[in-house]
Structures are given as C-alpha cells and as structure tokens.
Length: 547
Image 1 (spheres, rainbow, N blue to C red):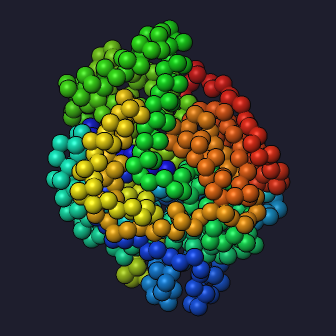
Image 2: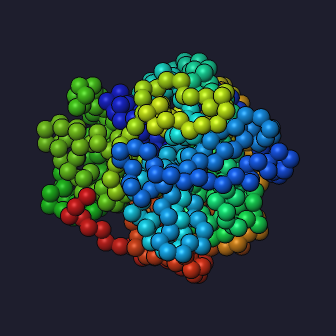
Image 3: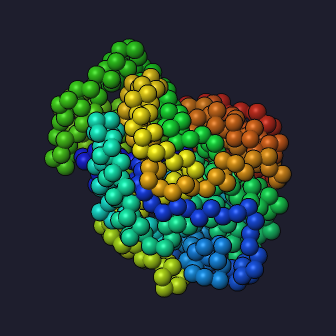
C-alpha cells in the first residue's frame, strides 16, 4: 500500500525520526534491479548453505529473550559472485518442540522488522507454541545496509509541500530530479537492488539458512505484496502463508492514492459516527454537521495556521496528516477525540502532533524508540563486504528513503513531465471528489516516481495464477489503507490457492484488532486449520474508555 509522507514543517521532526508508513513522493533514483523469474543457481550455494548464528540482541531496549542473527545475500542476484550484504534477523524461540520458523514482515515498506518485533512481540507469543517467530530488516532498511537521501529528504518534502505541486508543477519536478543524485550519493550500492523481487529472493536464502523445508509466513500490508512475490517465485516452497491487509498488485500509483483517499474518508466518517454518540465529542452530536466542521477546520487552518509545539505553523494539512494516522487503528479513536478537543478549545496542537509518527504497518500498541543519527551517508556495506550497520548509525531518514526506493522499484509506470503537468488538474478533481478532507493530502502521490528509470514489471505481469499450497488472505471492511476490494481482487488474481477471510471490522489489518482474526490466523499457522473461503469475523466492540 502506498502510504503518505508527512511534508508539513511542524511535524517533519517526527516524520524523519522513524514513523512507520510515511509519504511516497517522487525522486529520480536509479532503477531497481529487475530480477528474472528464475534463480541463477551457479554461485548461489554459498548463500543457500549458510546457517544462522543466534546471540542476544544488542541494545538496552531489547527484550532479554529476543535473539539476533544475520544472513548474507548477494547484492546483485545476477552476479552472485560479486558484492554481498547482510540482512539482520531477530527471533523469539519456540517454547518446547519447534516445528520450524514462521517469518514475519510488518509492512511499510521501510520499517525495521527487528525493532517492530522488539516492541510488539507480545502479539505473537501464541505462535511460539510451535514456531520460532522470526523477522528481519529487509535490504536497505534498518541494520541491513540502510539507504538515505541525506539533506535531500527535506528537499523532497519541501518540493511537494503546500498544494501538492499544483501551483508550479514544473519547478517541483525539477527539484525532485535534482534531489535524486543526493539520494544515490547517500544510499550507496544497495539502492539499485532494493526492490521487492530481490527481498523475496532474500527470504528464500533465509528459509534455507533457518533449515525450513517450506516458508511459513505472516505478512501485513506491504508484507502481503512481498509474500505474494515470494509465492510466485518459489511456489513449491510455500508453507502456511497468511497475508493480512492485502495490497494491490496491479493498480498504478494514481489509483492507489485515490483508494487511500476514499478509505480514509470512510474511516473518518466511521470515527465521527462514533464520536457524536459521546456527549464529550468536540464536534457535537450530529454526524453530518461534524463532517462539515472538519472540512471547515482544515480550510481555516490552511488560511490561518496556529503555532505548533515546535513554534512552527500548524496548518490544515498538518491536521489532515495527523487524523489520517490516527484512523489506522480504532484503539486510537479516544485519543483523537481528546486531541481534537484540545485544538478546538485552546489551539493546543500537541495531541495531534503525537499522531504524526504513526503509520500503515502492523499496528503496535506502544511506540518504540526511534534510533538513528541525522541524515547522512549510509554505510555502503556493498563497498567493503558484508556487515550489519550499527543501530546508532542508521540514518534518521531511512524509512522515507527506503519507502520511496522500494515502491518506485516495484512500479513500471513512468509518466513524462508533460503527462504529469497535463493530468494534475483532472486528478485534483478526482481526488477531491474521493475525499473533501484527504484528497488534496494524497495528491502528491502522483509525483512519487517522477524521474526514476522504469521499475520492474514482474509484479504486475507475473504474480498471478499461483500453483501453491493454500494462502489465507485477510481483508478488513473498514481498512483505510488497503481497501477490502483489494483482498478480493488479489485473491482472484492469485487463483484457487487464495482463501479469503472477511473481517467486518475497522482499522488497518485484522490480526491486532480482531480476536476472531487472531485466532483463525494462529489456528492456520499452528495447526493447518484453514477457514472456509469467504467466511467472516464480525465487528468487535473496542474498549472506548482507554487508548
């Protein structure tokens, strides 16, 4: 799913320091390596024959029972005898007898799996009844040769600030193109090899290094794209695979942005329907009037911002960005209600600014520490051989830099400057029709990959009609990031192997928010008990008295 990168100045500090699910904006970076559909066997044995050496994870905030390790993979799978890089792993060991591993990817793309498991591992402890629960930092992310755009990160944000490049799109495109060279400079040799196809091949190296006959996998949001690509490339190695919050495999970025705007508008309306039932709702007790108030409030702050906690202007688009992050989990609704009340009562923006580091990965109950130094040159491990990046050396802009690079490497569409500028007016009308609140905010999506060479067409053209073991696809009806129709469309595309579980709830993904989904996913992964295709989990009442 194409997330949104916070571009307004009042929340940039949060956005650059580790948000999980940030804006996708364009820059002219090197093309992704488009791997073929077959593995080059010669030269791969040294990677496939390795074993993971586990040890205690370093860092004061790491749980004592979490173990860390690594695998070495080719930088370029077309040249396995050449440079290499290391991929960071973490695991919770099985309690009792282990039947192998289940590999997790929390989404993004660009989020550190190791950090996410360290913070949110309690959600997966039931799986340790039969599995070692393993995750990883994908190539270009976290400790695995992290990419960075250095000072260009803020330049990209500034170029797409305001009205999404509508006033002077040619100038915006030029500035994005100029930022590309800085991204290449700070990212090092991993940048052309950072896409999902290469990451899927890394997962095959992990499977072998872990000693598993088949890959058991649980992927969220973007992780569903990664899982589908793995299944297409290695169909006979698919074990029990669950894809939760199913991404599209075919829609262009412009359509993904529209889907995001519609999904967030629906989620906002659901939140407002809930809010007006509470006498403390700062928007009153009429849902229609509350919707109008939000639109007027956004317009008012855009024309007359209030000071933020950082002393910078807090605009209507800052408000939209904060609301969009809060809507990814129903558990955050009470906090959003209070934050809106603070804003309306005395102009206090602190509650809303707290949402600006949220994102569209697997929902985690509590925020993790956001390690890293200021944007700078990422250690180019491909230059000097394998090695993990020290935690304190991970660039603070790694997430947005990786998110842009991975999504553009997966996307084959490259409109020209004339096509971009010629279509913006028409697109703006479509986006504003999709959502009077989020449409403008999502419009910068169309600029995401401008200037990049064409990405791979493998995902759009070849990830379909799978001949694998059964795959469980979970779609949530009220998901603001990955609409339920993507689950149905992707299931149809993947073929008879795909089994759909319909989660009739709210929020992004179902595993963390629905006890029913959690139980059915665990039963499938642990015992092979697969729900009937088209079966459903009903909506569950949230505890609205606490966060």
